[in-house]
Length: 281
Image (tube, rainbow, N blue to C red):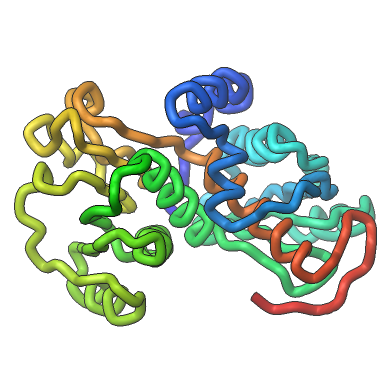
């Protein structure tokens, strides 16, 4: 997970209803529906009591981060709250207040886990499959085609695996050649690309990099569809005006993490407010 800045998340909480309405109109799906599709969650039991714990380690707190995560979770009908205390004291507080799922993030990891069992979800995985599901929706009923994954880290690898299973011809590329090879070797049906050529030749792209503004107008057409979980956004303003781009800095990844946990708990027959058996994903 790349570290967000306060400016990246300003306004998210207040804009969620309007953003969801726009998505429903353009894609036919809300954020929650995309998140649930991504992790295979059909269960309608979203109301787990969920604690968001501020973490002060590393470079410290990001202004508004915990509160924004809580708003996102409540938007998808979790019963979320931010603990008054940070760090270990916040974890103890979450348990005392009956939290069933816990969210917390430092400079490198954003994780959600259940207090019932060894169920957990990682933001890299959840964001990857979330944006892959969004790209699959953007493709519509067209037959699966070639898709280029830019970035072979946790987000790009998760997106590659999802789209390969969905029937797309997946090509993955990273500036780190070893990461590219490892991802291609690990994920069935995924090809490594050292040289990707002209981006305009790819109808579908997942930008899972942390590079800013490298996809330019000459790299896209009106038919290009891009799912861009990477922060900062790799698509320039000029290219945004041409291609169809799906991007948000935090919302979909957080919802996918939550419903990933909900789905795993449902598989264990753990309902809100009950004790559960141990399980490792």
